[in-house]
Image 1: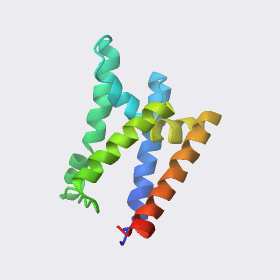
Image 2 (image 1 turned 120 degrees about the vertical axis):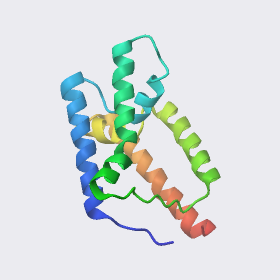
Image 3 (image 1 turned 30 degrees about the horizontal axis):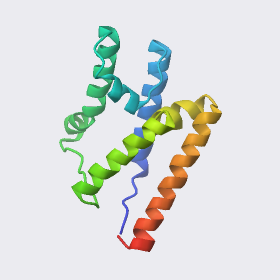
Image 4 (image 1 turned 90 degrees about the vertical axis):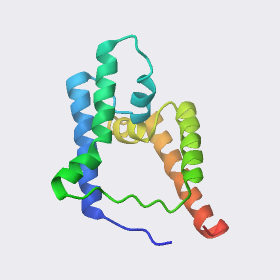
Length: 143
């Protein structure tokens, strides 16, 4: 299985994630944990909190529209696995986020930047699990 490497697009995406993270902390004193933001959207108690979460989610979803406006093309999404595999993977990640007390963006971007030991351990666990999963899928199972 061939993997497409896009260093400039990846760098630009990383810079935008970092900028959004810094701005969210500087302007709102909040950690940019995407799964926590998504999970909290179902809580209606605080309108200001809900509005911030909705704006963040809308901004995340608007990325392809921005690309359409800038380039005239919607980014291609090629998934090398079935829809069932994507859904099952999402459910597994959701369970992991619950047990890990946060997601890759919260721990990997924000927690590591704050030198949180808990986030460093969580990120190392995410990465080791990802490496092992890719190895098993590509080399043991042969997918």
